[in-house]
Length: 133
Image (cartoon, rainbow, N blue to C red; front, side):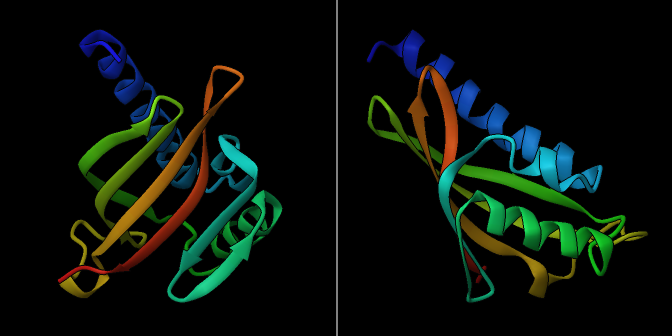
């Protein structure tokens, strides 16, 4: 891949994450999973979700309950392309609950996002996070 192609793909991959976080801020579960692969998997706090619909349902429940009014902070640490159609993003993230201006230290996580390119579109296919040190 050329430097120009890598830069364009990096921006496109980060746009997927930015769209997801805008959807989170809007508490919109449908928009949240708009860039998810139908067979995507997600592991959050040890809970496994299999498929875009399961992720959507979990987020909808959160947005209707404890995550209402929350938003996220995300600091990409690494974006790499093991193949031309696969991207791995490692980020440091935290949830700001409604009314908060800072996330407590124990709410920060390290996350790994795996994206695939399908039909010229980047899609999230796997997500996992764990507490940050």
